[in-house]
Image (cartoon, rainbow, N blue to C red; front, side, top):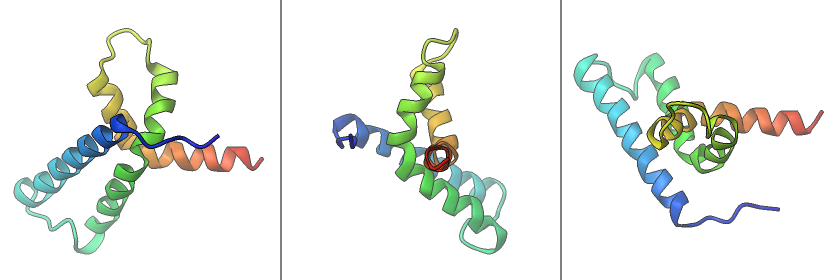
Amino acid sequence: MKKKFGFFDVIEILLGTFCFMAYYLLMSEYFKVSPLRGLAIIPTVYFILAILTLPFAYESVVKKIGDFFLTTNVIILTLAYILGPVILFYKKFSKNR
């Protein structure tokens, strides 16, 4: 069954966009590195992909660590954002085995 795209998914994408903007500002203002040049393009592309995979990865992260002691929604969303592409590709390739 395919996942329907709802209101909470839009909120997750907005939060993912906020995390990406924080990454972009950190790289350009603090580290003085252009995120769109050289080797810095690799994490930039990864984090753009993370925005798109966040709604799908969020469910997996909630199932794994949702009831763990001292976790909040902010921690879970941040982990889902950072690990989203890895989780999605792992699910994709583990089903093929």
